[in-house]
Image 1: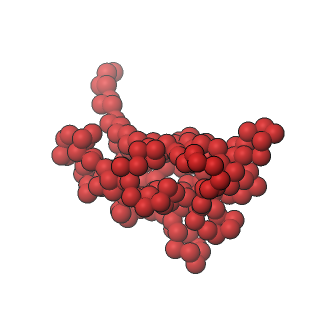
Image 2 (image 1 turned 180 degrees about the vertical axis):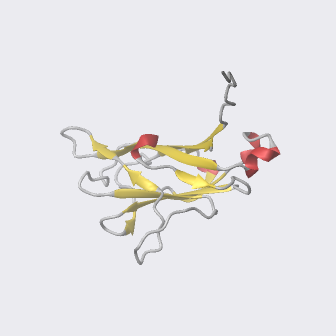
Image 3 (image 1 turned 60 degrees about the vertical axis):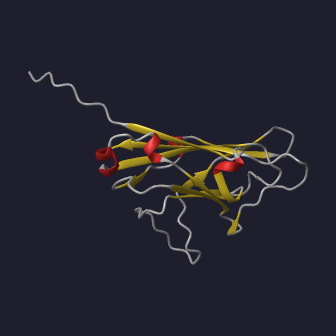
Length: 165
């Protein structure tokens, strides 16, 4: 009987926090984050391996998030991925953003966990130094724009997980 123990797969996580405005450029829901993958991936050979990418996304309540709409996110790492879609918008949606509403308030918020979407596969994670987050209202075929009333920015937290395959 072979008692070989499988080597555990490596997992790397990148946290994108919109309230840290020094970590991104652009606009809140059309942001480019500068990332230093070398700070978490220390073995050069690990960059050359294939990974599946999943994500979670949590946002604060916003009057512009309607539970009657469909929202999607494009997580752009400037790498070729096996995603295609048949639209004229040239938008590659990485996944859908689930939304919920506070009961009786009519205000929604994004709340997506990794199991809400299928993973995206990358042949390697070499040369990732920027991650773009773009949120779209799919029904309206527009870039999502947070509500501007009040003074509180409609921040979010996005955690991206790379798991070795």
